[in-house]
Image (cartoon, rainbow, N blue to C red; front, side, top):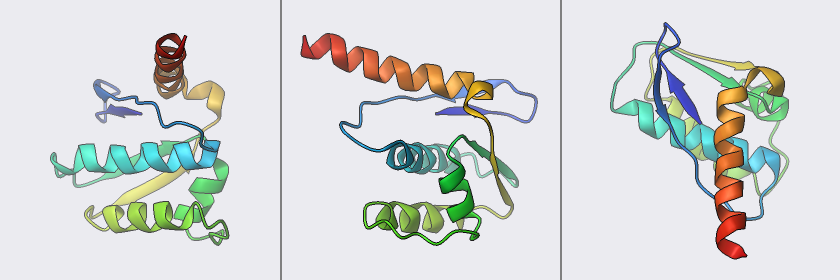
Length: 116
């Protein structure tokens, strides 16, 4: 998960091993951790870019959350979003989400090295 200011300056990059999860579960966890991290800064506007089309559509209210595994994550993310006055959640192709993808790979690589 990458947090940048409105000029593209990286403010924080976070990664952690989640264990066996789906891509959409991992995306929700990243969203939740990101929202927690930026809440201390109290931004007046927040733009969120996710590479999971499903999570974007669910968070924007266009898709229902049918998965029992995703429902509590959706609720937690929705509750956190209420802290911000203006939020836009947008889908971004994975190829254009290199910073966050690199951090996710670092978490996986670190776990694989520890388990050997």
